[in-house]
Image (cartoon, rainbow over all chains, first blue to last red; front, side, top):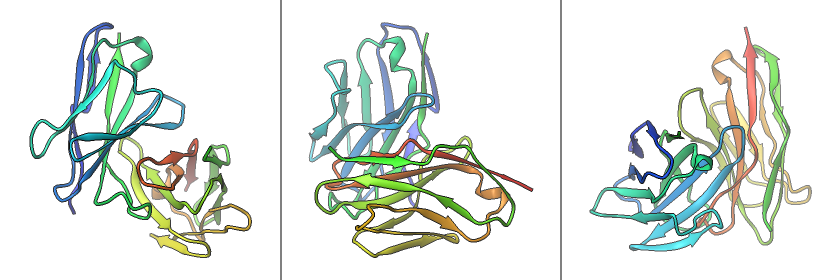
Length: 115
Length: 111
């Protein structure tokens, strides 16, 4: 069964450094998402992306964050200058369409640790 | 705004016990409802879904019925196994631009 893959599984970065989290969505999916889960807290929506544009973003997704689909397969999340509070599990997801009943399929996540 | 409330965990049961994890929601319109499961060390996997009132989603012995009158989507299983130990998340989507998540309920099944 096709799956969403994320790399790396664990990223350790010094505060203030840039970090790029990578995702390969399911190949025929057109909609892409990033979520994060701070330890012990809810999963939070960050951003959705379609047709090379951001469709929707949350308040969390400020100017420090950006997303890109640099080629036909990868979908990346960049954090420009990381803060301690950016430490979290980051999940990438994709879906075939934006119809509400189409499920989002998730990767295994990248654990980001900011020192 | 839209929100999802789940019962707090952890929920600890013995093998073969009956499971209920409560989930209620607040939403404008007619959202789709989902249960996702996160096994230890793994990502979020879709367990089941329901897209309209009175729909029942089912998978791997788990069931949940979309109850519009009580705005609920409780997860049930008749006989749990040790391998069901995981964190279960209730979520809703009204547009699929984003999922709104409950806090998650940790389920521990003892042999």
